[in-house]
Length: 227
Image (cartoon, rainbow, N blue to C red):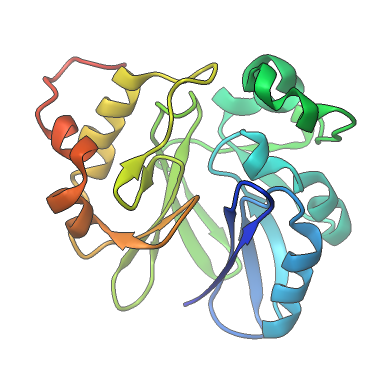
């Protein structure tokens, strides 16, 4: 498995390319702000050809460049249906502090986006990505489980970070839903799982289980809380 990444734009969103090896087809994950040129360079460095864009959620720092990337390579994008509203009406879902970013922004028509279903396995570019719906940061937040060969992998988006979790104070966010996702989707994963987050450095489930205070809180959350 080959995984390449770079931090895109002012928010430092991790944009990933996932492939079976150099010179192969690949999947692009979360092309955020100012991602077009560095993504093109990263793909060229390993001779990768993108076949799809998959989005962990609908926030602009993860979707800003999805239209030029999809148009430039003539490839589809995938997003959970609960976040399609962020593409259709970004002003409503991002809050006033992000309004300057939205001015003049072009996003794809939601009808052109393929939807992600919880538990579905996307077989793209020789890679299997298992969709794990994990709302809380947004209603349609997902993570993708992948087999890295030496260990399981998790493209975690903004659900789980090294030492932290995604914010829940923007429209569509919910701390109760986040606790439920952490308890029911994240905590059951193997300790060896390598977490590739939407921001910041990689970590492992075992490290976060031992040190992340939000996972400790989620472990104590009673059943029935959240969704």
